[in-house]
Image (cartoon, rainbow, N blue to C red; front, side):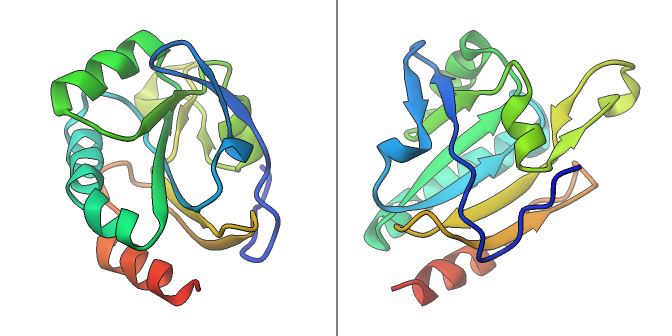
Length: 157
């Protein structure tokens, strides 16, 4: 598994959004909160994405944008976004390339042989493309510490 370290350049990727548009990491010029989540419509993922949605004004004031990434297809992500009123980009890594590049792929997720999902994880990328924070959990029921995310963003000038 790949190990992405704090201080490294963030691996560049291009994924499909909920409107079937290709979006690249290079499309963003602010700080980025990159939130990998295991699966749309699961209870913890819904809570996490809605918490990020509810923090968006504060995040935007810090010149940060949220990007959610899952292995769900764009159609599922679109329904998830619409039902939950998510007002940030959800990208589909249906080929599982980006979860592998970032070292957050979990094989045989939930005991489903052959099914690869994303580990719940957060990467903060500064406006120069450098990874400044990373949090990865092996337990999909654990949410990130949202205060830590805000504190880290405040430290990035």
